[in-house]
Image (cartoon, rainbow, N blue to C red; front, side, top):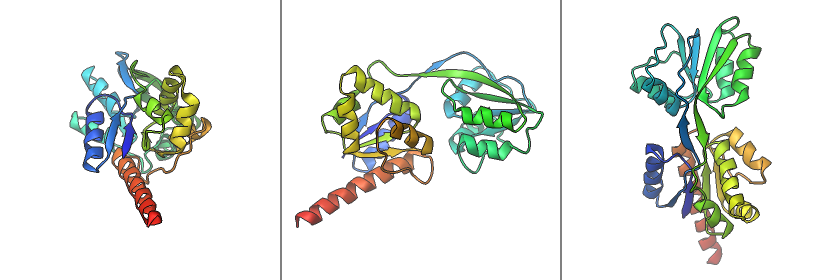
Length: 249
């Protein structure tokens, strides 16, 4: 089971590879994102929103002090990173998404300054939704997400029909995968290869991006975690193999 994973080349990629190997898969580690820090830090505000573990680490490295702000994390991984670095966490939405955070804050931010500290590819759903709720929204870009120059092994494999599954963890990983395929002159074949494979997307926005580019997503896990994404993909591959064996009998 050859499974492509696109996480940044740090402990997240190492953990993803270890997990897939433990599940009996053959991981294709093909990072589609690299972090380029901007050196900025979150600004003072009544509410401060962090949206990723990377953002927390960069804010902490820069000596960020939230003061009396209400500290909001968009999901459990971000919240855990905040706590690991000695920050309190005042709010985590039930739904780990921009929309979920807007819903959680909508009746609390009217007339308040809200600082959103994140990457340069953050969703407008968050900032626009908070503004619509009456907040004075300020966004600080803590880091840029770029495509590593050597990315694309998985695109070549997909184009050759040699990829069994692909696990997309953000809309940007989809876009960077397709850009890497285009640079190799195999975009159409890579899309065909994905559509013959098992494709998982970590959430609805990622699925929607894939669909816009002609990539059919087979499943979205019930929780936005790589663990759920990987296990669901391997389960589907095994079910397909079992069905093929049964059909052969």
